[in-house]
Length: 306
Image (spheres, rainbow, N blue to C red):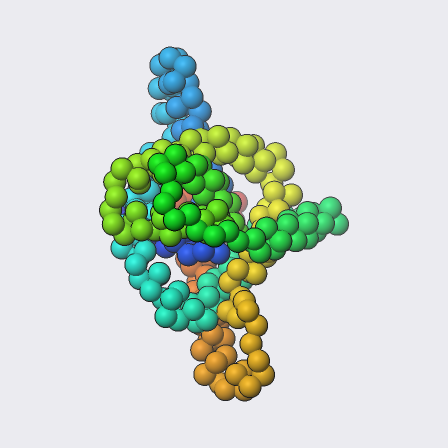
């Protein structure tokens, strides 16, 4: 059951990463596994660096500290989502753009609500960080680029490096970053066409980008947790710009027709409720896992409660 839960977690993260404007990191945050994920990636990256330097004994010890079943099953779930949902999400964004965007708007809004509770103490400095990051994300995500018609192989490698950094950050969508640099359609086509050579190059770039960035992110989360969480909430808040159902505006006559705004409103509410439900379930699963990994600590907690 635990293995299945981790595959489902990966599936949810992969589903989010397909959509421009939604981040797999946001889903990991909602599920309560974000810091655990970043720490494991950082540990594995450190082991890989030691291995490349020829320090085999140290690399083996470092790799031994990684929760491999947790990471591998997440990757499997992400892969299943990318391969099975890419065409469906692409179709929904094309045929039902307002309702689909509104649903993901609700998902991110719910994620902000959950993330807000993870900050132990708010102060003016952290609120300023939140506002600054929200403004920066809002401006950054307003930039667009024309698609690259025939990208060469090294462009897929660079796209992997940039996209993975965005994917691991809540609020910054790897898919939208690809859209901004003109590589979204090319990467999505490679996924849909099962072009293994291009996908291998893209994944290689992602692995290198992830290894380089995860160390810094893990250190920030450990040493400046509340400030870093405020920054991540700001990123998510700014990212709502991308998911607004009517990015080009609309007229009053259209909004007077219920079908033009009721369905997006309902899908946004459903999206928000789904995230809150997932967050509640994720917290329960996380507590259960904590008791399994630390039975002595859980027993002590129960005794103190009694």
